[in-house]
Image (cartoon, rainbow, N blue to C red; front, side):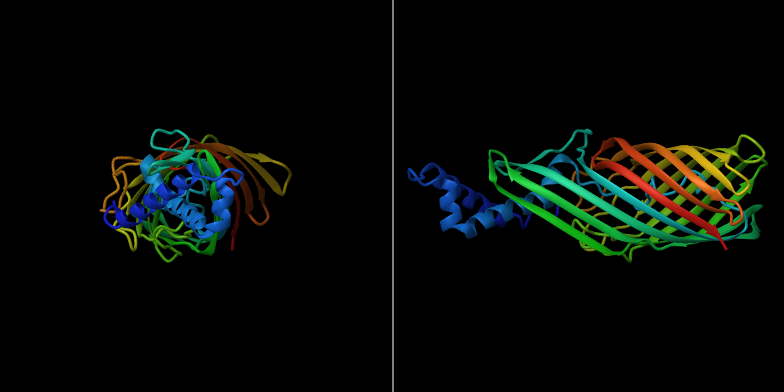
Length: 367
């Protein structure tokens, strides 16, 4: 791993200071508590110790639990149930809004990570991550035919905010602890889908596409508040939809996504490829002459297929996974053919990554 060579010196200093500190604890004078003397006379040492625990726990600690998952670009919870299906020819503007919240980190066995061993000590961990992203997307569906399929393309430019909060506390010595509150706002990695084909077979559509993620978003190796991922990703999709009735009121959808990642910037890590399977059932219901409502169930499974590569990759034999299931509701304004959709997804059976909840609000309008 990337820290094995140069971490010897700081770990040695860390261990030495811990020894001095605990020696002072055991030899304290009567009437003068150890913690008060440390705070009063050696405040610089207390700060150093706290910083040392925090630094090693955040940067190195997760590796000990196999929880340094290198995730892919594709967000399985972002798109709506019918969004994988190519719409009718025309120009479309879609505004995706996604909010993700989590306070649970899972290890490679799917168990909660509540503490981290750091040398001879154990550090309690309390993490709170809130992230929101807005993804304006332009879709062009043409009447051009390629191999009998309708041709379309799209481009997305996400931007948003990630807020990372962590509280670290030394077991048995709660007074020695520290908190982090890191936040970052900016553009994410650009997504371009230059090839999107769709074949119609009456009450069924089958499509495939190729897309690429361009790493323009903020990324600094080792930082907790990155907006981009610092790598190029190739994305391949195959999807299908079956409409139970000719009016397309009831839709059964499925989409398979495969990601191939390049090496990350400023660090020797090439994340393993990811495979995601989305599925859903969508039902339109008439409200009146101008409105339709939509209700649906959406779910997915996401798995890391190949191992991480590179000298800086930790626990290369560990692969992350996550499942999600939730509800979708929407409203269509027929005169404009515009739609507003809300979706909630709860993650479960998560391994080697965070487990949380996704909330999305999507507006789509042709022009």
